[in-house]
Amino acid sequence: MDNRRFYYLAEGECEEKLLKALKVKPALIHPGKVESFNVIQRTLKPNKLMGFQPGSSVVLVFDTDKEETAILKKNVELLKSLSFRVEVITIAQVLNFEDEIEYCTDVGKAQEFTRSENVSEFKSACPPFSP
Image 1: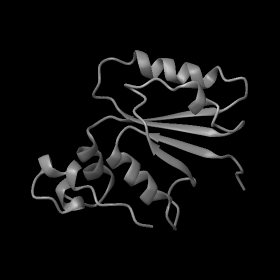
Image 2: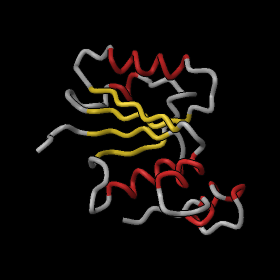
Image 3: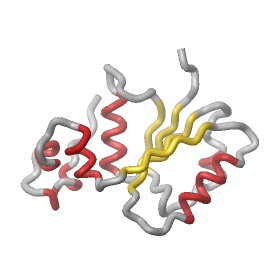
Image 4: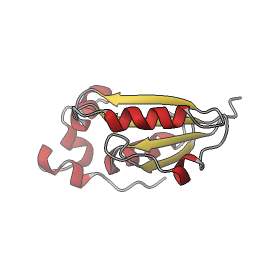
């Protein structure tokens, strides 16, 4: 059995809700703490870095729609420079979130997933997470 602790840093609220839903039984991802934190636009602060346990895995989930990646690179370097070892896993969404939902599920259109009227309402219509 894998005893590592997992921490998921999701770019936005919809990604956070999806990750929380994937943790529910039957677990589709390793259980762990999930929070919304945009690693493309915000630098990890020392108090957050010290919250990770030695030997844990930190999973960064982000879009590739931003051309500027300096902050992401800095965040990865900060994680790798910790005095204790953590595994850094990056999950980059190649398409936008709506396209990713259509690609990896059996829904035809992303708005079917949230039962929203159209794709522009998709993100505001993300269903609340309830385990």
